Length: 293
Image 1 (spheres, helix red, strand yellow):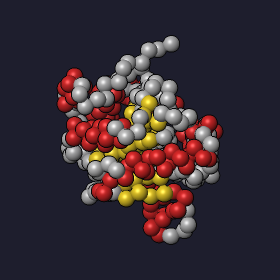
Image 2 (spheres, rainbow, N blue to C red; image 1 turned 45 degrees about the vertical axis):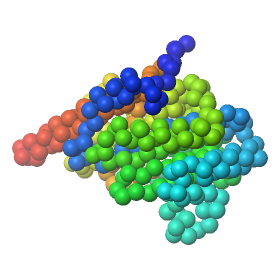
Image 3 (cartoon, one colour; image 1 turned 60 degrees about the horizontal axis):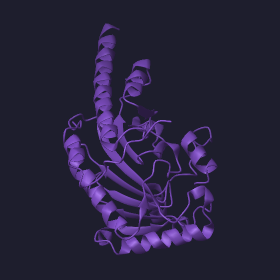
Image 4 (cartoon, one colour; image 1 turned 30 degrees about the horizontal axis):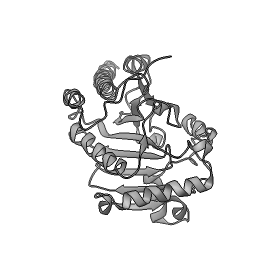
């Protein structure tokens, strides 16, 4: 059985910060639209979603909301309760789209995507929408932050950021939020304390949204080879919940177990740089082909 390294996701770990500062983040390529960094944690005293009762969902939601209301960052955002948003209204629809899992979304064939199917089959949507809330602080552009309660896991901190924003500052903000929460409510960061298999190990996910021109066929063997080399997952045009017509793809880390947080981020950005180079070469090839014809 593969060992998992001890987490280096700590404000006090100087080696971690040195490794993070050495990562080269692609910031000048216009095809990179945004990044999303998320960190999952389980709360001590509560089982995984598949074993939680309706009362436990409500109790954990109340515990988390009480903790957040006493955090220094709380006044910067707004808490949204899923149960209260299900009524049809423009503001409710917008909040549902921005701040909660889309477990009711179907693809073009009316079939739920693979990750959604697994989430539901694992008991992640038990008693939905009971016990689910999101604290969110919208900011200008892509630079928003959310804290989700009882969605993918007990606790999820999501930081959206633009390519021009320093990765170091993004991570420091996430960890400062997490540390303040952990002073009031103990979390469990074990290798197997996550519901979704894609979070086992570190609970860390990094995603980039890339725009791909219609003229470029990005679903090619070379793309798969680059993605495999750097343990990346490419969710076809539009990602899981973006329109196909948007001509965007989502790129994320595929492996979270047996690898540390700094290495996950390093692999992701190295792989992304290679994908950018490949996209540029495909664009050049397309222009050459067009000129010949």
